Image 1: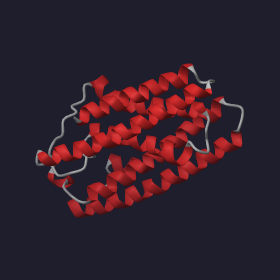
Image 2: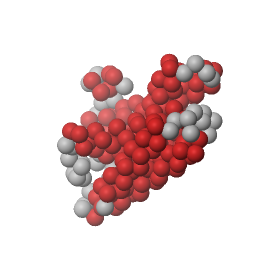
Image 3: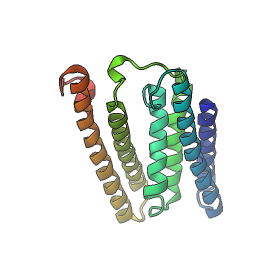
Image 4: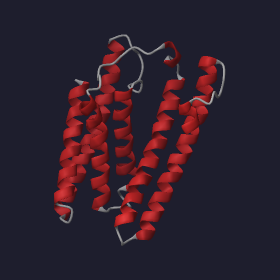
Length: 209
């Protein structure tokens, strides 16, 4: 059931992208694209809740944040969240909507392109911790903020109007992403100490963060 909801979300995001792409200058189609995008956001949320319940029934009582597929789904949802509730009301450009829906579509298409296993799996012992909730959620909220900042920056490069508005949006998104990513690094260090007895080991993931 959860995969059907995720596939529905992908269909809604793709349709929204097409409408914004081919009818970028028509306001009526822009509204339809916005509501389709919102539908994708709701479908993803419902899909994650259903997946959480289904994994619980399988004996894996953890949120759907534990593997690459679930991470891509959650990242797509976070981008949608930031676009819909934090930035789209003030930054109403339809190009912003186009790039947001395209980004969410690509995140959901990647697992299909590479043939990624979409079935839930049991967690390894090191991941069976309440730190999973805190670390993964704060990190992906940080990625979402930085992702929105990236989209604003792309628009800034190709659009001559409203440069100050785009600069403001980029700044706010990056600040939001930086704050959440900082919390993600802190909770990750705490989790590492809880799981392996050390806060930092200079492994590639920690270093790049």
